[in-house]
Structures are given as structure tokens and as C-alpha cells.
Image (cartoon, rainbow, N blue to C red; front, side):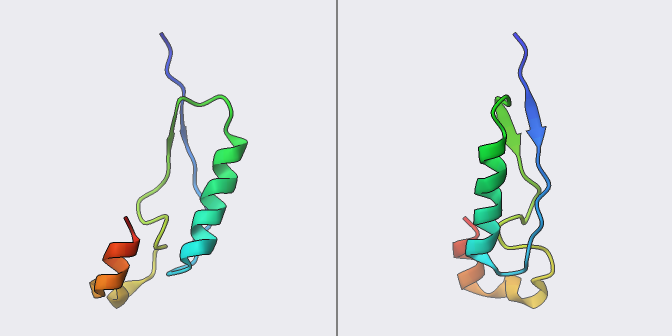
Length: 63
């Protein structure tokens, strides 16, 4: 049995929760042939949040 895995890079904007999730959803819609889809770490919060990562709100919303 073959398992097809896709690793999808997406453009991210720091702390743009809705925009980052929207771009992830659009990428998911384009993947029809993969069994497992992997996104990069911090794809929801976006890289470059710097000290904002210490905020409790960021931790809760990232899940």
C-alpha cells in the first residue's frame, strides 16, 4: 500500500490568523491525491512574531 504525502509551504503573515488559515485551506483544496498533508511549523501564527509568542493569546489561538 502506497501512502502519498504532500508537504505544502504557504506564505504566512505574522499574527494574521484568518489570512494564514485561509491560505492553508486553499492549499488543502488543491491537494486531491495526497493521503497525508503536512504544513510547516508556525504556519498558523506565522514566523516573525518574535516577543508576541510570550503572549497567552498567541499560545491559545495557535492550537
